[in-house]
Image (cartoon, rainbow, N blue to C red; front, side, top):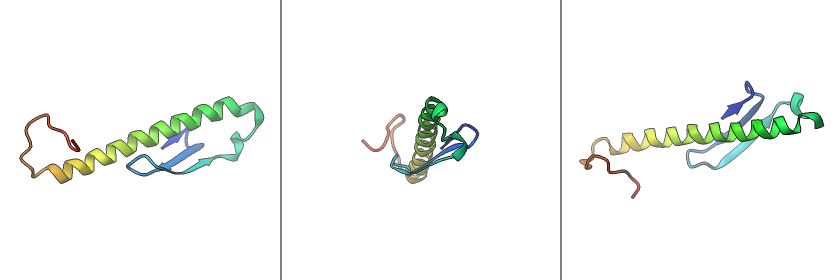
Length: 76
């Protein structure tokens, strides 16, 4: 996930485990504290959304051949 035009980046697994956070040095000023906090939250949310999308995509591949009733979701 990324925020602030890539100034803050978060790496996460499809299960939502955070693997790393990268913050551009230009943001490491005391006056930028609030903005950095907001960018970190935005990057985390972006990473989570991408992880959810990747997980859903993989689940669709796995269940594509299964005769599941409409609307039934896995895992139970």
